[in-house]
Image (cartoon, rainbow, N blue to C red; front, side, top):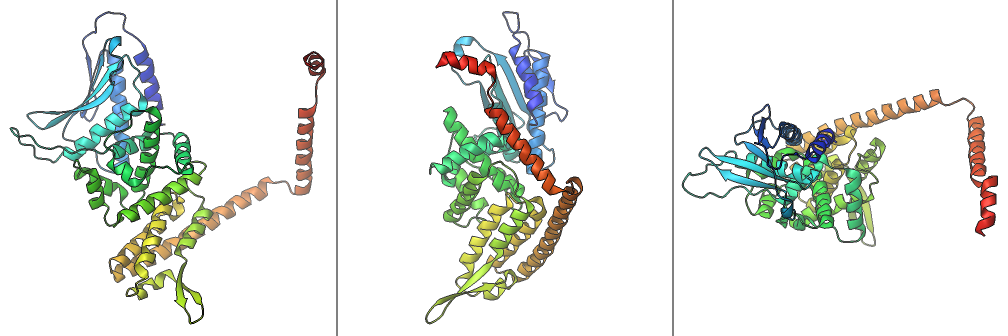
Length: 431
């Protein structure tokens, strides 16, 4: 985890209580870029919080692939509070109008422990809000609506940046196996994060998978940036407008999401598919068959991917292309790195075919076939290299090695079944 060391240091600093009865004057810390300003009771906590915020922003910039530019400052205010107010919330974000523009305050209250996920989510929300409102013209004497960042995007980004997939995947698996995962519409229309710990973890797991796969779409980071720039209170409508090309209907979005959930639920760990498995799934998707109705039967005729452009006037082409497009988008999120560019070109080719751009369809298909051949060759060379290493490291007499391993397993089983005299003596009294 990229924040593990920083949060460990923060935990040590937050655990140390000041011996004085009154709070000392806050200490100030500013990061190198100048966007983060931290107020804390002592210099240790202010410096550590400043480092943590800078680390979060670095990961946030990497996710969106954008330069480090900013307009409005973000202030983290850490203060002590009496123990009798322990039931109140301890981390939240406030947006303040200033004579220049806006200022974002992340309020941190002690003595409650500062939960790691809530702190990351609060800083991510402030960064997203600053990006969304950066270019807005705010009249000085009139109220102006500010961009509202949807909870699924905040939690999804926070979990993507600093989550443990081994913790989130079992949650998704249980939800899918129980038949009650969150739908895409439920995620997009949620206005708040559930307060209950179990419901919150469930929401975070779904938001994590949703954002991770949106980022894996072609130009996924650019799309999320556009969504942030146009964010309003109606996040569901903003999402539909921004992704209308990838998901022309609500049914297409739910189908894409259902395929992703089913795949995540069957994955043992959050990792890419092997190259051979990716190649097998990709070839299965590209395998197109045309049903031909004969007078007395229905026959299937294979259609090459490069020949789909010949059937633009057929009614069956658009549904077939949309189905293949959804399957390719789902595969790209978990594909082996060898095949990611290949799948991206196939996706661009199908999108061009739907739009009637046959020239671009042929161009993208040519690029996809070239990258596909390169990826297959890389996979073949990689497997050959591993086979060569195995031959060099394996003894020539494999039968003897197998007999030795079998003897070792038998000896180990006998050791387990063997009973020592002390155990026999104790068992006499336990009968």
